[in-house]
Image 1 (cartoon, rainbow, N blue to C red):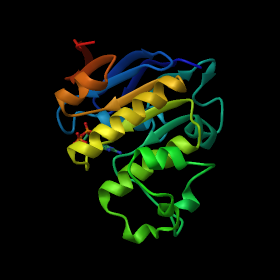
Image 2 (cartoon, rainbow, N blue to C red):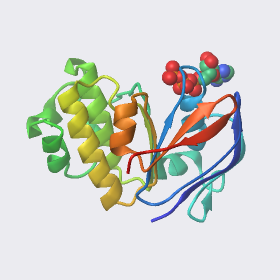
Image 3 (cartoon, protein in one colour):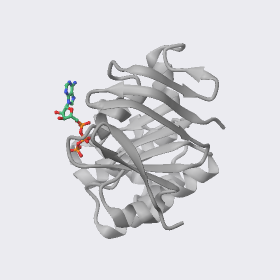
Image 4 (cartoon, rainbow, N blue to C red):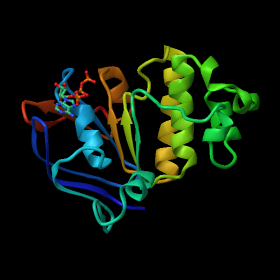
Length: 201
Ligand SMILES: Nc1ncnc2c1ncn2[C@@H]1O[C@H](COP(=O)(O)OP(=O)(O)OP(=O)(O)O)[C@@H](O)[C@H]1O
């Protein structure tokens, strides 16, 4: 169980972002299109050059190889990439419960990637990410392509796992109603900075 800590992170138009996310805490981030939400997640995942420090517990980004950092600080991007032929080849361990909770039968593991709808890809990308047992989560609009019923399933499933596994989570979201359902804290990007907003819990 570790905190995710951002200290003076500067990327693109965003300047000196400070933020600490506790184990098991969901921090939602919103702001207008193009304001830099995705780039901030990518900086935290060490996928884009930036200045400032990011730390997970006692480990600083840059002290470990990028692939090890990203295995711990797991980014689930808005558009997922798939490199094996079948769903099952992307998953680690037994995912029966996760698949069931997100509305899939076990036979989804045999499905070819080519048949997946965008909403199925979205949900399965989340299962894949969590199957790798990360220590922190960066979610870029995880329910963007989903209908209301599947959005509710994903929100419930994610919140349970984030609490159980005590994952510090930064969740980019556009919809205020979702933010009020899932966020422990909410920040909006305003100009070059983040500003705290109230949440109902
Ligand atoms: N590698 C890059 N170099 C320079 N500018 C970039 C780079 N990647 C993205 N941008 C620009 O940075 C800005 C922020 O992009 P970003 O994808 O972070 O926006 P966003 O807030 O996630 O938007 P949306 O809500 O539409 O997904 C955009 O104007 C984008 O064109």
